[in-house]
Length: 74
Image (tube, rainbow, N blue to C red; front, side, top):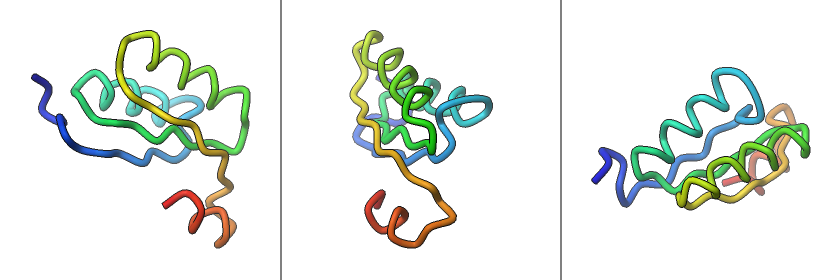
């Protein structure tokens, strides 16, 4: 069992860099991950990588500089 079982993590900017690494690590540790990025292609690629490992994840496109996108994300 991972240390994040039964947790949900919303990770913004998870299409690349530190956000991507964090999303993958959280999924590996058992969290259900909300992959969020402004770039659909990057976010969907990370979602695919997480899903292939057997973990649970969804992708939501969001620009965190926009209030409505943040509301939709949460």
